[in-house]
Image 1: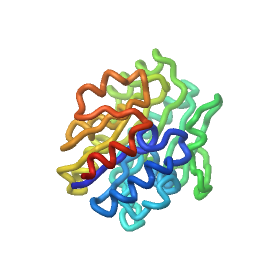
Image 2 (image 1 turned 90 degrees about the horizontal axis):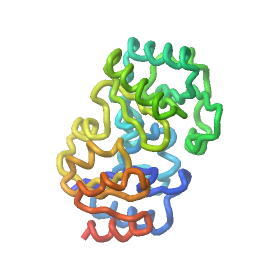
Image 3 (image 1 turned 180 degrees about the vertical axis):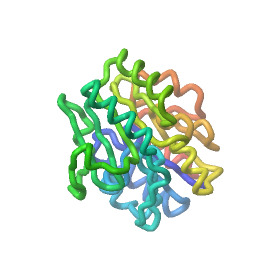
Length: 247
């Protein structure tokens, strides 16, 4: 049985580290079962937060990237046509953004945002201009009002084939290529039966199809979503839940 873990808000609660008890539980679990990570972070930003488990399969950028045997593969980049639509939208609406290429990134963040603590923590990439990104694997539009989020979601749904995920209370939209998400990438990697841990809207498809699903109650605005899954777990109890389900 594979065990698949989202990272931020699921096993990490400070965007920088995984607590000692959870990390210890993951190390023990990994001795018994394949432990994989599936995150919104690109691989570049995912590797530093799982240093004891970086030999695991890492699914990054909401499924758009995979690292196996420390070799990075892009599952599907955003098409040129869809990328052009998003770039024009960014310019016309003067939007904040993070645009990830295969390794380097373009960033515009004009107001305080916790995402800045996640970006390239090991300082391995170049920050380049939006015009220099010739191929994007994931885009985050940041700091949107509720009305903006709904308007842009509708526009992109009509004009592109992008996979679009909103985040409650954060004012962000995550964009990846058509039919690229954590679940589709797990399927492409041949994983059918798995235990999944997640806490956010980008985890819903993965959790819904899991053999056993665990919802972490780290976002109060999403608490109602947890009732559809096998287990609901508070952040303080994650290590114990990992131990319970590994038996």
